Amino acid sequence: MINDFITGKEIPEIGPEANRQAVEQLLVNEKGYAKQDVEVDAEIKMTVGAIPYLSRIDLVVSVRGTRFMAIKCAAGSLGSWAREIIAAARLIDKYQIPLAVVSDGRNAAVFDVVSGKKIGDGLDSIPSKSQAEKMLKETPLQPFPKDRLEREKLIFSSYDSMNVNRRII
Image (cartoon, rainbow, N blue to C red; front, side, top):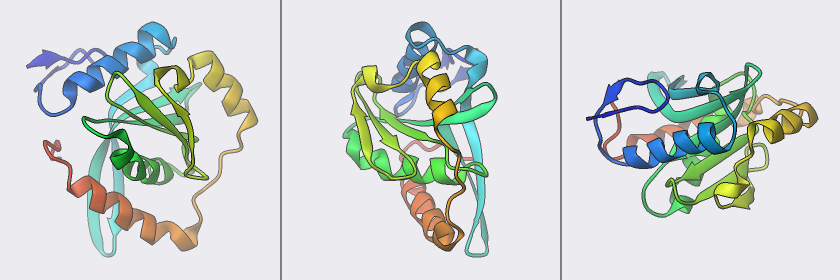
């Protein structure tokens, strides 16, 4: 068991938990976010077909109360986790969270959620709080298109349900 850096709660040290702790410390100690800006295990609820589906996103970072960045902390190839976190960022709120990040604590891949395109590589490409504030002023928040919503829910739930060491809710 370890204490989560953001919440202080005791949690099991399984799967990519050490990677998440590294990302949490990076966000606060190097990128300038307050601990209160970071949601740990942010709840994501949806109905897939007629079946309720409930899961969690590792980290969701807010800027001035607006969710700005969803982060998947993973082990292994970062590219294999990209589609899952992009789908989560499209579904968790009324609007698409602008950025999705996959990180193993040593490296990162950053994606524009609306386009789905990679826009950065490396921990340096994760925006600081001041960069995020500026980006948020320049980025219109867009809802996900309704005609693609069911497909996106299937994509997220399919990837998410395959996670090893997934924290069951």
